[in-house]
Length: 142
Figure (cartoon, rainbow, N blue to C red):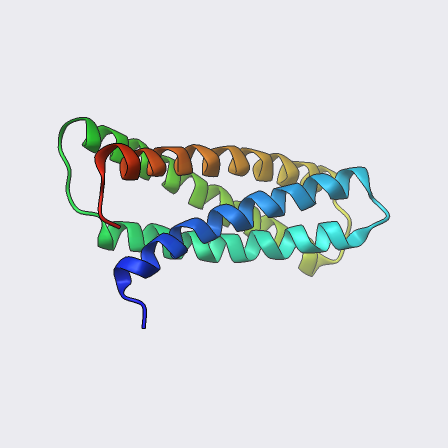
């Protein structure tokens, strides 16, 4: 059985993979409009990425100890970017669920969602960078 110290890294990396693959599929759906599978996959990866990000933020809050000095600054930046990423994921998920349940094509909303997804891919990358910096530069036990 896995302990919580082994589960935390899996929980943390899972939303990164879901969001990045989801945005890749979103990008492919722009170029291959007739292949609706890309847009469908990006939708579900967004939804599951948002749920996984909630778990990652909660586990980070629960399992990360207090820090001081430079490590505290890096941790603060990491947490800020994680919170921004989470908000973007939730807002975009709500927008996409609205678009899906209304069963109407909203071209403007589709591009707003695409832009939010792109920004989220950037923020999740920045979050991951600072998280990796915490682990490798300050040797945090996760």
